Picture 1 (tube, rainbow, N blue to C red):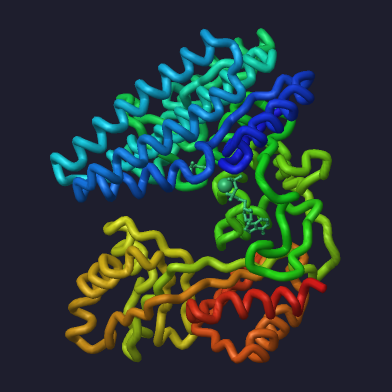
Picture 2: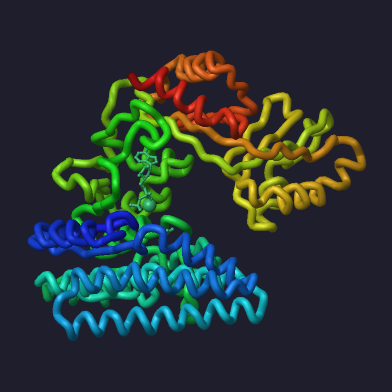
Length: 463
Ligand code: ADP
Ligand code: ASP
Ligand code: MG
């Protein structure tokens, strides 16, 4: 059995839905289980309209709901031919969109938009899309059933990026999906969304449908997890920004996790976890070019020694430095930094400490910069007063560039070549970190330099 996850662009319009119907039909001998995203652009529209709702911009809300209705109805009109099925689907859209309108109204009346409300609002995208896909499959003669993942995937209440309760989730998935697969009915499961044990809607984080695909695939013991998207697979860099990016036929789980963590958004970083634990290969495939073999992600790695597989960057970050000559004698500085930031729910993307211990640099999401600086200033208030620590300094608008590849391990000169490439482009490096696994080198550069630096490093390694 194969679990197939289809991303937003793969389910984003009538021609694409026709294509995935054929892909699932061809795969029917392998009992595919489908996980899908919202139609492309829908999650962004739902979330931006939530901000309009907060400002009581009624015209914008109405326009968004109308646009959603049109986008989906167009699919029903073109791809659900049997009148009773089409009417049923149109009725379902209407009910959902009415409920969405009431939620937006509530946001405006209360003038409050919590992470919990945002998750409830975002959930409509996958609920509309997956009910639609199941109807399209049925109309094309493929027996399919819409499954709302809120009845399967249980999480904590960390809205916006909830953590999964794997034991309960696995049992639910097996209980609900296995009987469908046995009857040769294709389950069409909503990606991205989940629920707490009390039934409150949560989400797994933006782009989280990949992760849903892996959770479902692992719980069912799938032979492989296929992530269908709009590129031929994982490339040596983001093809939208880097000229000459090449396709990678095979990479390891660790490489995939590392590159996606640092911005290669072709796959969500958490996707690899359930796959690794159950040793299930992941394949990235192109809906626009289905005969292409794609990229295989498994526990094997191939490539020449010293091979750099990917150069990637992640933007919208800030650098916070805790500095002071007296820091050498202060015990547990790093531990205190992490604890203080965890208290305000800020995750650290990268940490770098000079061996002289005069300076600890942290890179965090830019949106968290204010609470992070405040938390650190509070934590180190007495050290600052006692002058063992000078200050907590903020540098706004930085990017991390990561150079990733298992083959880098033990190969000298990778860092030198990286720095030579950035120097040629006149890019100054603000901080550097290298994991002890030598799977990646990460550099912090000014936001404005990131694109040039990625291209230069890519050109230096990947010919
Ligand atoms: P989906 O909607 O299918 O989930 P995404 O937009 O999330 O698709 O991911 C696919 C996109 O990821 C590609 O169109 C590509 O621009 C981008 N991308 C970024 N880095 C890479 C990379 N290293 N290899 C391939 N694609 C990448
Ligand atoms: N629809 C969600 C998003 O846009 C989840 C996903 O597509 O993976 O973030
Ligand atoms: Mg994606």
